[in-house]
Length: 284
Image (cartoon, rainbow, N blue to C red; front, side, top):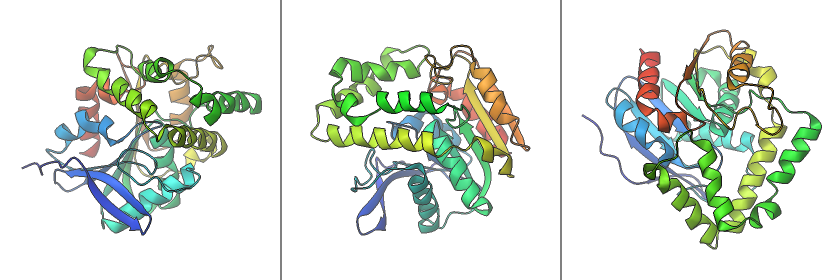
């Protein structure tokens, strides 16, 4: 029997920090899902309803996103990793498989390196952190994602940016574009731009590529074959997604890589059935 999903529960970690999360399903294992840059826990809806038939599924909104608090902090990846560990402690979770998408996967790697005994397995979906950048390339990316630059974008430019995450953007995916439009039109948009800027700076500053060899738990890596975000198409047009995926996977001793066809960066949304089955098989 699947535990009915509430729209949002709130987990109070400190007097000023509450984490929005959903919690459904039950089983011998617990899966904790971490979203990526600019996203929320809603991106996992096509995954948890299926996987919750055999496992407990918990999805969180990172601070600064969704229903979680927007405290006045620099939103760095090490801070987010600490939040993940605090959620696990607060919820008294055991036998955790940590699942992250894009930036969330880089956060998951950092949390797993910090407290490896907390995690049975790790699932990295379209992970950031596998692609390396030179100092000049990092500076270019920082300028592109500077808060002042993001605030200058038109609503069309900002909302259209979500489409690059998909191979085939359909009417069913318009929800994400409408969500971006709502953010743009809200009073919270300037703060949101600062959150994105802090996140990208931290993704570039807190590299994990050289630490991947320290991961000891089983790791499943999933990429969409037509990912248009990794590698960066402007900075690394000579590289393929498969090359980036293999460069990271080869550093992790106990790992497996699966390239999923007909999918972009949001592979877990576009090809949810195949991703879900891959995760379920990985759990068994």
